[in-house]
Image (cartoon, rainbow, N blue to C red):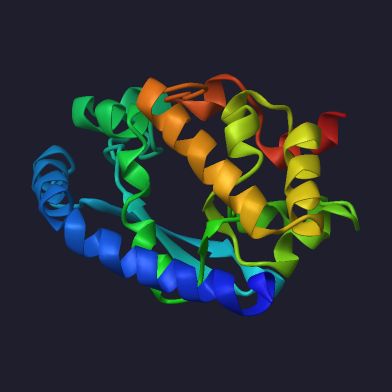
Length: 204
């Protein structure tokens, strides 16, 4: 009952209420990021969602588009703006995903939507992470976030799918709030601590 009906209703109502309540913060961050990123406050990228249906995830843009002399984007650490570092450390870059939740593309709690290029690298069991809506936060994020290795992170996603309940979602929300307030397990540049999944699976 919770998984099929109540969870989606709660997602919609809470997302709508939060967007209304934090609209001043949303607008303020948009203005700062417009100035920091040459008029581009949002990062939009195609990601696989429920049943591997592709959607466009929306986040605040924390990196500029500076390129080297050959026209190739500079490494992430060299493109992070000062305001972008703050936005990432405080997890404020996730705010625009409330729009994805309203549209039914995401949930508050669920496996994080990863890159399309990772799809061929999941085991059959790990593919179960796409049987539910992806989340803004999830069991893996409150259990180590980017400091977990890929095997453990994906195992956490499957564990969540197998055990979805109101009580589990409430525990994840509480732990998420605590982690955000303390900046626990936040890695500003994930590429500095973990390989992309395709590289990880190729090497292991």
